[in-house]
Length: 349
Ligand code: AMP
Ligand code: MG
Image (cartoon, rainbow, N blue to C red; front, top):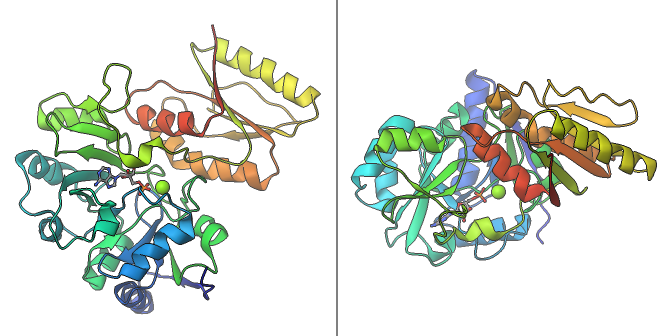
């Protein structure tokens, strides 16, 4: 793999900051790989019209060759350049949720290279709301393919330092924009099927999408619906290196089960980690404990999850026990990531 010097770009809101962002946009346009902050997670950007840059995305991430990329654009006009005229549902959703954490799968225009969509006749598009992402996209003036800026399979990066750890020496630049506000990837909705299919839960909830469209959507991979899934969802994802056990069930019983398992692993001499809500009473000096926030505040929990998973790794945790939450609202996306990351799901009675 090509070794490169990675630039670390910080951009305050002053003239020097704007200049730095312009430089990053120039790099992106010319075919370099530039990681940048979005409201969901950090993206690894490449100009979609630079074939070598697209190939390098797959190479530096170790991304499966058949997992298509989301194209990031500054506004709806730019979206029409890659996806043609938008169907009515896309217009409704775009008006309501863009800029924001919603990705729409639409028919693609011919000029979108097959490498972006991995040969599919569709393209996934999103208009991010993070001010630096928007400025970068406007300045770059080209559609930007941007999967999460991490090694495939590891937890997605929600801080510039996470990107640095995974990709320094492999990409040309990292733009530091602080912590990502949402901290989970975007919702992916396929509008080429009717009714629309939710391919991945994310920052915009199913309830919000259904309320906006006035119809029920099909949830891919759910027990009731066996709609064909998106190529990317079949891969193990978002996983820390240590095995993760996810605990679900009624309050009280979950804590009891977690306590039992914790004792088991501690007795075996393992360095154990616990990720749980503030309300969970588990407190162990022998274990590394990360509290994500209140059970009633899924937003806060989502924003801290990936950072907590990475902290566990950094602190040498060998086994991770995580308290599940109800699968409603943002809880659906949070639990989707945790289930994918987990080795086993353990139910309290
Ligand atoms: P990420 O790797 O986090 O950027 O995730 C991108 C997600 O969008 C993956 O689950 C992909 O499978 C999905 N995706 C991207 N493009 C398409 C497409 N054209 N059709 C269906 N799913 C797509
Ligand atoms: Mg990813």
